[in-house]
Length: 275
Image (spheres, rainbow, N blue to C red):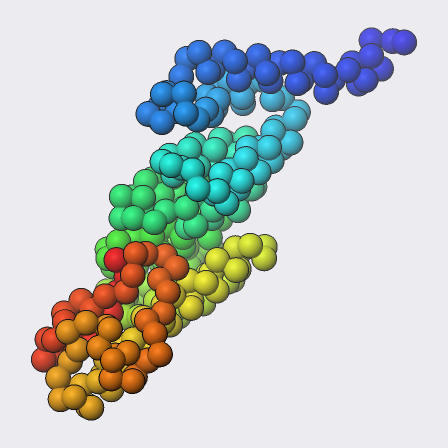
């Protein structure tokens, strides 16, 4: 057996040993995430993995991507920091795994604080993928979720300039800052997300969000009907059920329940959002 054939036969074993050594060494050095430093979770330092993964980078990237997908499917406490580290490592190893940017930047965040972290993560993903229109689009979408129409519009406009970007981005960028963002506009934008993903799990998440937005729009419509029927806007959403306008309040799949933004207000007492 010559040296070259011996290397080919044992290359995976050598890589596994080196990779295990990397994980053990970087574990001793710790991580920037408090939950990981405490020993609850662990993601190896990217520079060590990058240095030793060599020609196996794509395979290692897939490993960390799948690990992140499994964490996302579970109920791990403080999981956002862990997820962003996993997906950031995935993109550092293989920037072409853009789906990691979608899961970390779009699916994982729940609260406004989460969205701010997700935006920082997406901006780093944008640096790694400077010609990918979907990442500035997702960044803009997160800014809109935070209510920042200006930065949302700017990122939509940036995304619209890349080859392959859908035409609606330019239209949305031009209209967001002048018309604001209604539930109807949110639904249109969420429909547009379907063009930016390429797997069934992501499409399922988007469709669930569409239903969530449509439920709020339905509640607003029923609140307007309540006004016609009772001559005032409802004080609670439960009044819509009590007066026979709904069988039940729909489940809130993304928050802790729907609520009236301005209960009983004579002008905008129909506005509904999620806690």
